[in-house]
Amino acid sequence: MATSSTVEAERKFDADPSTPLPELHTIDAVGAVGEPASYRLEANYFDTRHLALAARGITLRRRTGGPDAGWHLKLPLGPGKRTEIHAPLGTVETVPVELMDRVLAYTRGHAVAAVATLTTERTSYALYGHGGERLADFVDDYVRAHVFVGEPREAEWREWEVELAAQDGTDEALLENLAEQLSGAGAKPSDRTSKLATAVGDLWPELKGNGRADSFNEGAAVVPILTYLQDQMADLLLQDAHVRLGRDDSVHQMRSVIRRVRSVLHSYRTLFEPAPVKELGRELKSLAKTLGRYRDTEVLHARMRKHLDELPVNLVLGPLHDELDQRMAVRADTAMGAVRNRLNSPRYFRLLDELEALIDAPPVTPQGQETARKTTVKLVNKAAKRLGKRHDAAQAAAVGPQRDIAFHEVRKSAKKLRFAAAAVESVHGKRAAKVEDRAHKIQSILGHHQDSVMSRAELLKLGSAPGISSAAFTYGVLHAMERSAADSTEKEYLRHSKKALKLRLKK
Image (cartoon, rainbow, N blue to C red):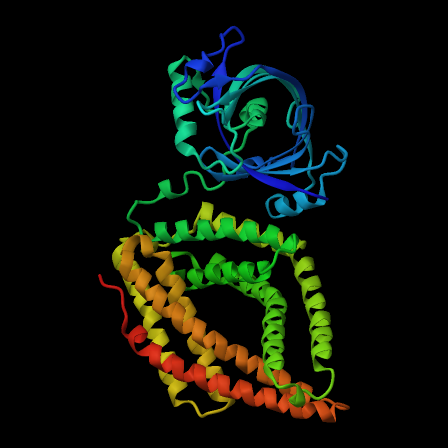
């Protein structure tokens, strides 16, 4: 089903039934006002019975009438801005699959049904600039609502909206100027967030995350950590939709978010009561492992294909390109099936609930309420010392599998240090950013090293499989190339590790 998306930037105003329209042509930026266009709009709004979408500022509706009839999904983008995704009209009984894929992480598997029907008598006026360009649209709406959640109710009201005509919503100054002058002309800026919010009234839920930081002293150690986790949670929900929609690189991005959350919870675990953090850590690790099977297949396929393509034709014995592609396609399909099953499971939805609960009502220890700067310095520098110990162990390890494992442990410690520093950049500024950057460099270098380790293990399996005697030579050549690549990354790591291992935050 074809969908399209735009950025909606608008301001709402309250208006009594008898309030005259503002003098739109007197607004400074407006050179001309178009003839009024009238529409009758019928909209069915969909949500769970607990209004899970509304609690996250999301609107899902099907509307008939007007120039944009169809399904509309509005996702928060920032103050006064939303991403609006359109889908064809279809039927009122079935929410389009692509729209549902975008909200399943918010509804957590709960049924979605119509919660209200709104009928709007709309008169729209196009506002043009002095050069004839269309700036915005001003609409005058009379609304009647029938609400089905809680006790059935009806409501009527009038409101005005001004919305930018540009579909990227980037001209914030123009919108603010239009809104300011409309206010000066007697329009009353509205506190309502949407028509559905007005219709639902007292049943409208508080937005998720509101007031969380107010529970703690502004300088408390836990505040920047919770802020970081809240940002990651938002990204996780976004990446969830991208994975369901099959977007390129989405599994990798979702796995990365999960690793950031898990790493920060581990590094700052003493700021929270242990039980919920420990349980979340286990579940996040398990989810990352499920995603990792698909991601590792992607990486392994791309790496082996690249090296195979680089070989001279006379060294490639047999149809290895096709065999590799087919083998990895089967493995990827199996892994993606496991990912989709996991993302639709009650276990996954429970994890999202528990992660949000920790962020919204964190079980903070006395250490979490201590001064942020002093407390986080100790924890970040502790992660840096751990990285140093892992480095020494890798240096002392015998060449071979033991050394490979040791370097993988260095990489994991670098990752923990990177995210621990990133979480407190608002506290420690450039110094934390520097630690993050150096740790990221180590992580990236040793990531290539680990990719080589995995590739060599796969090549050994392929080369020793029965019935491929001629291809064994080619797999041996590829194995030698990977061994050489691993040696190069070890040398590169040693060049970059000296400065990174000495870097610390300052009190």
